[in-house]
Each structure stands twice: as structure tokens, then as C-alpha cells.
View 1: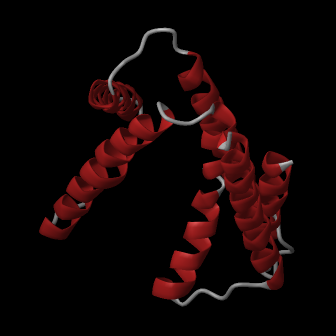
View 2: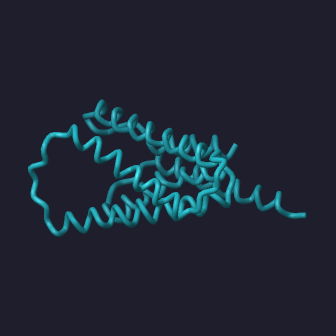
View 3: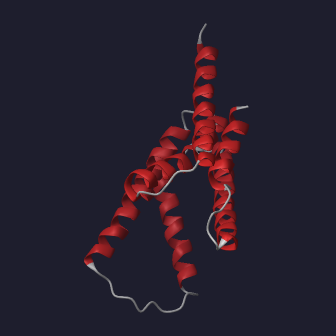
Amino acid sequence: MAIALAAAGVLSIVFCPDTNADSAHSLLGNSLVFGAVLCEGLFILLNKRIQTSIPPLAMSTLMTGMGLLAATILALFEPAWTGSITVNSLWAVAYYALIPTVLGFLLWYAGAQRVSGSEASLFTALAPVSAVLLAMTFLGEPVNSHQMTGIACVLVAVTGLGWSERKSMKP
């Protein structure tokens, strides 16, 4: 139930009626994001099925290295980049490499060792919630009623799972 409620909440956040004139662009963008969410779900489930226990730091290192290899191969097929490299752009790349990628993977694998696959997958529903709330707070983006309903669904799902896990742990 919690996963279904969280999924409904995420769909409400992402697939709300579009007020922009370029709705085809939004549909493509939302479809790509939804595809990424499906990949994330498969990633979580496959991670829980790995028979060999790999420590979080080693797994984070492997995933980051594999990402670098994949990006390098894909970059070979991109047109030549003609932009300039600034100090700010180097800081941005360093931030993205260290905080969301390395630290994010490290925290994810450390946490995934301690929870079930359903719990881990449910918590990924918090990503769009935090994105909406951070965009509202720091970018001044408006939040509509569909998004607020979706956020409420996700929070109820996560809270409900927490309560049910807590009850099942009592003797």
C-alpha cells in the first residue's frame, strides 16, 4: 500500500496539468524523468539481489568508476565542446562529483544494507518531494495543488511504512 501511495504521489507531482504552451516538451521531459525513476527502481532491486556483500565505500567507488567509464565512452560520440572553462564551472563539476555522486552513493549503499528493498524503493519517492520543495524555497518556483497532493501522498506513505515497521518490531 505504501509503495502504491508513494507512486501515486510521485505521479501527481510529475504529471500535473501543464500550463505552459509547450506541453509536448513537458511530456517528453516528464517521460524521460519517469524512465530515470524506473531505472532507479531496477537499480535498487538489483542491488538488494547481489549475492556478494560489498562494503559501501567499495561499492561507491565501483559505481563512480563505472559511471566515469560510461560517460567517457559516450563523450567520444558528442560534438566537440567549444565553451570556455571557468573557475565556477570547475567548482560545479567538483561539487557534483563529490557530493551527489560519491557521497550520495556511499550513503545509499550504507543505508541499503540496513533496510529491505521495499523500504529503500519507497524512500526514493522523497527525491521529487525534496526537488519540489527546494525549487520552491531557493528558486521561487510556484507549487500547485497537484504537487501538494503528491507530496502529501508520499509523506503519508513513508510515515505509514515507518509505523508499520515499528509495530512489527515490537515483541
